[in-house]
Image 1 (cartoon, rainbow, N blue to C red):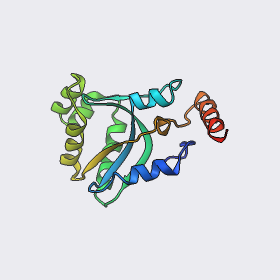
Image 2: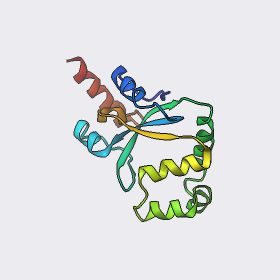
Image 3: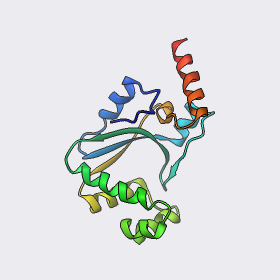
Image 4: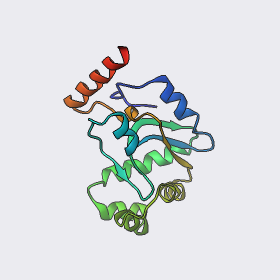
Length: 154
């Protein structure tokens, strides 16, 4: 699955992503900060910082089993409470929140925590092209997307 604002989506990104989803219930495409900054140095992205990586979402999702629906439900609860850290802590566990706040939460521990809470095996799939993180949420994103598409066709 992808979102409607993924204006630069390329078939090779989908192939790369799907090639890395075996053995999990749900996969999320991400681009590491260094990859985004290498490939799209002018973009401003939101990054999630973990102890072992900093990444931006790529709006690519794979749900391979019915168990993935449990992750979606958990994510909806977290999104609803995103401005209320104590409620999020209650959902994820105070230990997870404390590790996140102190910069000690890594991607393996985060995925493991989601697995404990949902029963679903989750994988963050780092894509090799930083442009995969570019979506169109505001006018400046549209301008950037148009520039990148123009560069592709020349």
